[in-house]
Amino acid sequence: MEIYELIAPCHFGLEAVMKREILDLGYEISSVEDGKVTFQGDAEAVAYSNIFLRTTERILLKAGEFQAETFEELFEKTRAIPWEKYIPKNGKFWVAKANSIKSRLFSPSDIQSIMKKAIVERLKEHYHMDWFPEDGPAYPIRVSILKDRVTAGLDTTGVSLHKRGYRRLTARAPITETLAAALLMLTPWKKDRILVDPFCGSGTFAIEAAMMAADMAPGMRRNFQAQQWDNLIPGKCWSDALEDAGDRLDLSVHTEIQGMDIDGEMVRTAEENARAAGVERLVRFRRQPVSELAPSGEYGFLIANPPYGERLEEKKALPELYRALGERFALLDTWSLYLITGYEDAQRYIGKQAAKNRKIYNGMLKTYFYQYPGPKPPKKQR
Image 1 (cartoon, rainbow, N blue to C red):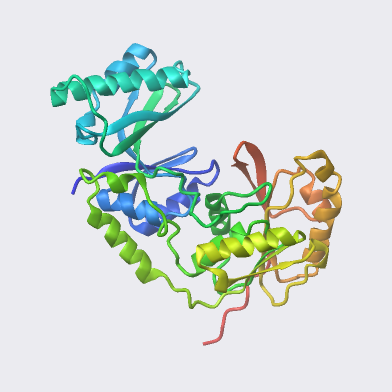
Image 2 (image 1 turned 90 degrees about the vertical axis):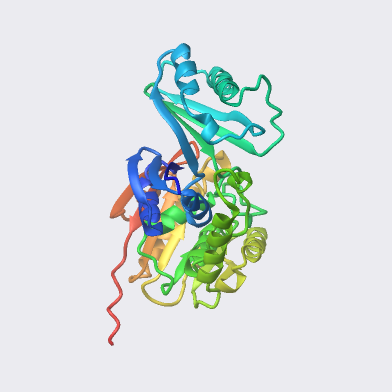
């Protein structure tokens, strides 16, 4: 079976988490760059990475990479890529997205148009056709240009992987499923430890944690673009990966995962989302302000995406909110706290400097992931 180069884009600052996930699936890493990890895999790897990876937005099958400083170069080098290896004569194809950073070619619409023309010319020569019906499976192409280096890949995913399918209702400022999963992976939390989200909103942290505890593949309930590509990814690859996902799933696992929110409507939303994800038995939600936070047990984890103060009326309430969180955390002497926020004074009002903080972009917002690790629990006696 042919080996492809596959590209997994991820949040800037979380490449190490993505790399570890790919290695755990058993694939070889080619390169790690800002915002993406490239790895090698066969057709089965396309199915497995789409279904099992928690922290990437999509999987691209790399068609070509080259240097281009002019539109003429872009056209000729795009035409030199063997597109007929990927796109059948009835395939529907277009450049769905182009982005350019620090490059001479910077107009996305021009890049998309020129590359489409170049692909058409290449396929005309190969298939000896003057016109393509484009009535078959869709092969969307994504292009990124960084410092005049062009990378073109076929989008095997379609709708972004952060859309697991369970979050039908969301909070005002939700955290994406992929980012929530990545932040959980940055902590030492394991499924046998208590986990509490005191600002649960639509329940994303708690639901993602429950899915991890049950070893539920995040993509097992949705469809992917490349499921139509019988010429590249045989149907057996998808059925084998889904069968494996079903074998691994363990909803009987014992967990102590909780979500709390001051807004009763958000609590009901979180419960509905947990049901849609199939993990309602593994999580508990309740209405409670952070000022009353007092979870039982030792060596637990608080993980949170508190308000950042994007709206003026919210900003006035932030000092008291973060102060209350700090006061409640101070009473939990064996616990750990991890929070993502764009609020610059977060540490000041929590009343304690984080042991570590990591800069992460949540969409276009610059945020920090503050880490307050607690003591390790004593080793269990045999």
